[in-house]
Length: 597
Image (cartoon, rainbow, N blue to C red; front, side, top):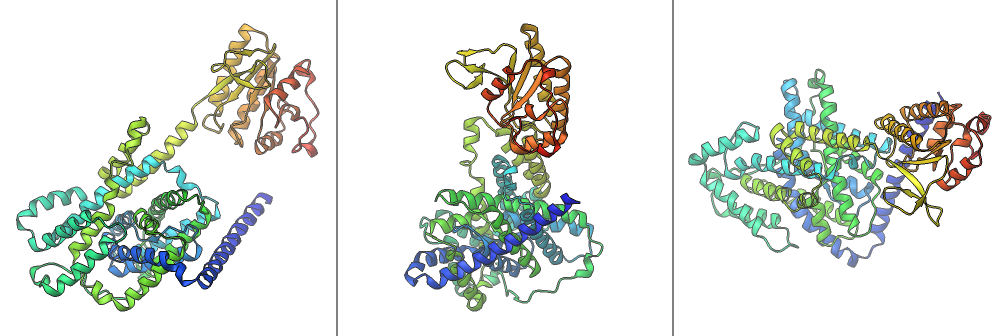
């Protein structure tokens, strides 16, 4: 009951801390806006203008990727900018709909729709986005701010490349003015090849010219997509593109349709939970990399846990109002940094400009040709196909198979299955690598108090009757028994050469011990004791020592569990006569103290 009470109290404390942090962040933002002179807004305003120039057309385009109405992308953009401006911690991050999250959302909705045919796709999307926001908030409550580190960067880059290729294939029909029903990317490629002779050359011309301009653009501080959109809108007033078969975005209805809650009664909730978790992990992995890579270039350290709250709030609000899932995308965040943003006021400026665009310029947005949106999406995700981020892994001869496997998983198995396989592969590799057994024998370096690996140093001295070992990786359930079997084998081999009275294990690499590890240590201590050998553990971390003290084993008494150095442990061992003389009395009241250390 005490453990449950402690857990609930800890959870309440984290929630209240998150609320306080969000409130303080909002207060600081308002104060900064009120006290900053107008001249200081110049760079942030320029950055906000550059960012909103690509965000608005991309928001409409990404809604198309997710098979949602354009309004869904605009809603996502509004709440993404608003929530991160108030709660977020990076001065450069821009939170909006991203191409990868839109693609994963589209696949998730399609999968759930196949199971629940009566559910409206927009309702399913809203539920998935809100559940994604819930996962973010839960991650903050559980203090999982560093969870994205469990997705290896090679995996993320392989997945990004696979997603980029898939998105480009899915956008080719829109770019070329074709109507293709199938959502399988490879079936789309075949359908495109079959339809080339009969395609609409006017639509294809608009799309290909737009794409060529986007790739040829050389003015970095001027948003290419903004000027391409402006030019394409102007062309629609000069040339009869609609009569030539070129589709336009059309009127954007700013009234959101009501969610059909009744259609969710028989929904596949287990599938929705799994898919929203995958969507959350994908969004956070991309957002974490984007936020921290840009901040690191300026010596900043964003608060990961507070960013979880910001992303969770943004997704909850976006989903509730019918928007797409949102995250800090690479392209918008990088553009904001390059455009000279100095603070989150750049995001505030982008938000204000976006609201003005929605109020006054919506009729013009409705005249954007669809092939232009396809070109914008292809250009936006094309950086994901770059060889440059992958080149170091092949140069270093590290993680090459991981990159290739992640790319093929997404390209062959599809977005959702490929993403799940890649994440499982990443976590499995962590466990496999952590489970490897590395045990070193230490000896005293001549002329010093240091104890070093005998394989690396020759100028060492042995200590009669004492063998010193070190576990060179954290011990946990997967490697505990193999590691201690290696220890037992090394002790047995040593005993064949010289008599042993003491074995000392340095535990510096293990911050804590799970139940399996404690059991394995007790078994080793008993087996050594039966052979007349005393086992001592040194350089123990506090939590690891407390776990062993709680075990109250007669073979691992407090005097054998030390926080201190190897040198001190050796001196203590030499001061003892026989193993049976070192069995001190166990005192429950003092078991968490420094006694015997």
